[in-house]
Length: 207
Image 1 (cartoon, helix red, strand yellow):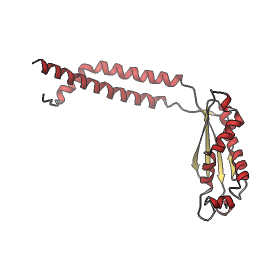
Image 2 (cartoon, helix red, strand yellow; image 1 turned 90 degrees about the vertical axis):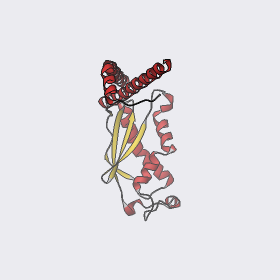
Image 3 (spheres, one colour; image 1 turned 30 degrees about the vertical axis):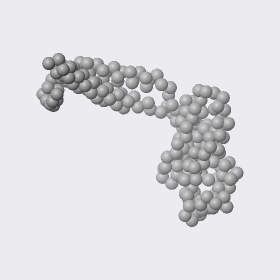
Image 4 (cartoon, one colour; image 1 turned 60 degrees about the vertical axis):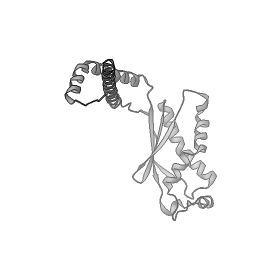
């Protein structure tokens, strides 16, 4: 069976199915909005650090072993990020705040570069917890640095702004609804085309 594409035919097909497509898109967007509103709010607290530079961050013997010398090794920013992502930091946070004892508790930390410094973002379900975790990360950085003698600079970074009570993070509901509507439109259109194609195949097989 030769299947020819007819633009006017498909425009007419869209017109005949427009109410179904609109309904599918509207339901998808509504369900996405409802699901987003029902999800638990995530809070974020941010601590900002000023980083020392150059000679002040010269590494100790352990730092040299890992190639973290001030002359051409890793920057203080790279070292801090490595510590924040280490299993040692994860263990310290979990032990300090007894995260493993409460299945509803969770947390995550991320870093962002800022001018001459770094921002540490702590996320979690409790605004007081995110504040405490972000500030604890700064304290634990120096504790780990002292234990391992990674850099000669003490402290590793100066706190420009300590973390404050967590702020609710945007759920981006309009963006999610728009994306859901677009995907629903594509899915409904593909289903419409496929159903029409199968109907044509059945009609041709009866001839």
